[in-house]
Amino acid sequence: MTDVPFVDLAAAHAEVEEEVLAGFQRVLAATAFVQGPDVAAFEREYAAFTGARHCVGVANGTDALELAMRALGTGPGTEVVLPANTFVATAEAVVRTGARPVLVDAEPEHLLMDPAATAAVVRSETAAIVPVHLYGRLASAAPFLEFGPPVLEDAAQSQGAVLGGKGLLGAIAATSFYPGKNLGAYGDAGGVVTDSADLARTVRLLRDHGSERKYEHEIVGFNSRLDTLQAVVLRAKLRRLARWNEQRRAAAARYGELLADIADVTLPAPAGEEHVWHLYVVRVPRRDEVAERLGELGVRCGVHYPVPVHLQPAFRFLGHGPGDFPVAEAAAGEILSLPMFPQITAEQQDRVAGALRKILG
Image 1 (tube, rainbow, N blue to C red):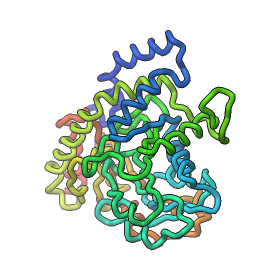
Image 2: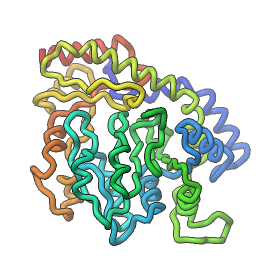
Image 3: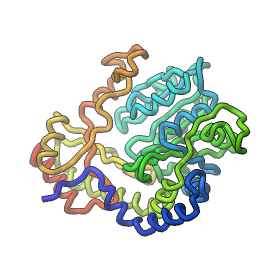
Image 4: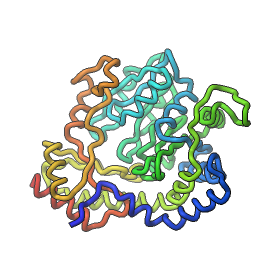
């Protein structure tokens, strides 16, 4: 019997294959490999999708975070507040600007950045606050906006999520189009969205050697342009993203029904339009053992994330240790991401639930 994959990229490709191949042929015929028309078209279309005025395509999600931070004035002598429960790229981007990451714990229900903990560390050196939209759920920006520094959303896991009818909640948002995301390219890609023309222009300069006109360089920048072929893929997938997100919501609702009677499985809290279920994350005892046994039963799972940022060797210089962020640390030992993708079938979900019941029932 075929394993249940954690994510099925081939199923998504099958839906867009003809459109993508036609787009590739168009780009190849025009030899528009760098900053081709499809890049500008995707930027317009993704801005409209998010409800933002501007989108700037960049090479990857980590660059998107860094360039957005730099546009906000982040650099040496400044601090950026972010959650300990996030992928390391969020903290990496801070360090790459020369600023210091200031970590805070998660709130226990959704495992998103804790506003109260954030308020306690904001000070005059704080250049930005970075709530991370984890698992497809938006972290409400409202409390963070009250603290003063600009809010930069890490939106790599929330493409298509809205809160109060809005997809952009802070001053600027950075996202990743890594292949496994809700909107995934066929390689690395990223984007920055904002309502500010000034911030958008700064990011555009930064991504292309500080230049708007060839051989004229206003600032020191980077080479972080969105590849034209990736823009072709993203345009094709963007046309289907709303439907794919609805399929994810339906799959999440079905998981809730299938797993409700397994006492040792803690389900994610219910959510509405603000959640696009990039991941379906449950909490279980003996997580590593459960994950191993699921694999033996043909169910592929993930863990997001097994080691909080403050316990990573690369961030020892921050001076943290075990016990500093107890909510994030406790979650790191229990969270388990079940198979989730738009094309997941009822039979596949039945197998996931059956395997969990066999292990924990």
